[in-house]
Image (cartoon, rainbow, N blue to C red):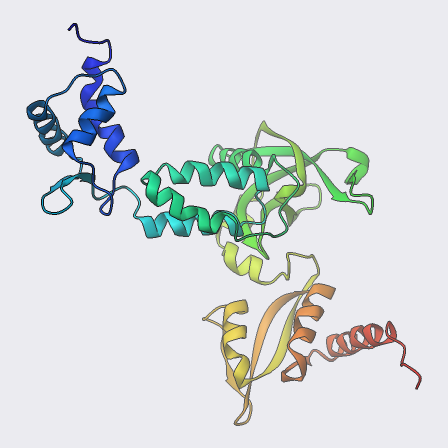
Length: 332
């Protein structure tokens, strides 16, 4: 019987079959492997299969052959362990900036890193996240363009929008282009943000990446790099709450000792904690004062207090009073 055109691909097909269909719990017998090759129009004998498996081992593939009650062959070590793939799937699902469609496609690609049986086990996680996702499908490619601009030291232009109550895009600057120098990407409150230098305003600014459209990389070199070279992007982001702008001020805050974990998570382990009595401590931090910061502080209840400066303490009290005013007392 003449050999098929696929015969020369036998070694590659053996590896593909083992990679896709086997793992430690699901070895494939030599007979089953020969049958799988036959379905691809490839003739094989046991002796030649054993030789091919040894060639794959010499090449570096972790092909393991086992005997016993369940004899067979399987791929052992892979680039990603199953636990690592599960972690990546969880991260994709948790990423608010990815659309549902993009999340599904990425998870499908991650499934190819493990066997089909293991991929089926990943499906348990695909349905976990019934959560809000971004509506901007292009963000995936926007992030890639931003990295390209930073790598090649180029300015960018884009349009920036916000949603109306009709869920329609309303572009700022009447749809005009923003021109900035991208400096870094940061992650805050489950969203991607671009930190950039605005030469017209001579200031660092940040933008929600999923609200940027029509992004173009220009030929103009970046500006303002020196303002950011000696700064920590993480520290920069920590000053902003939900990345809302506000005047950066030095604040003294007082917390109950039970909130030390919350404070460290928010401001970092390097933050100096100054004891204030047996049950509390104070910190002094640089914060962009905004309604979002007030909301975060109010959410911690009476165990968190804004101490200084006095003007900001008064402004915070006014914020709390305005919140109360929105809920008139119920008359009996």
